[in-house]
Length: 255
Image (cartoon, rainbow, N blue to C red):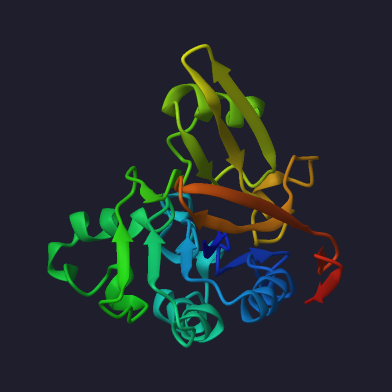
């Protein structure tokens, strides 16, 4: 059996709140995941999208210079590389995967507006990703054994996104984007093994300014498990982070 970890929706970047620059990412939550990874020593690491927030070029902020005052896309990318990419690259992994989320896809939008930026403004260039990294374009999937990983922006279903994903993909699909934790299972008379869909929690802060302080279903956490064996089977788990702490196999990981 080989081991894997998937991390979703870190949203490394910043927003303006009451005139102050505050992080969208949660360093404590990320620290919890990284400390587990150091112990677990996965063979495969998957970054599931919206790892880099790209708020500095968001279409939501067009015409609002005050909303991005002092923000720099390259600075965010350099910080993300130091905080996450470099520690992961130091692991002895078999594979590294970066799935492009809808936030990173704003880089593509920018290149379409300014074609001269092609090859400069993209995930691989900005994060200095080596050739070992597989870049999965937005809307496409990464397969690991019988598991399928997607970002999740293409998954609908409202508050029942895990059900929608399982029925639509007819596979064992793991996704983020919705910043929540859900599980749905489906079996049939011709496939007694069934399929599961799991919405993976986020690693960003749970109360962004655009939410206006309203309640939401956001949960912090990450996804890990095992794939392979004689039947190419899998066992996977979601570890929820509460106030910067996750307890896994009797050990507490503190951010």
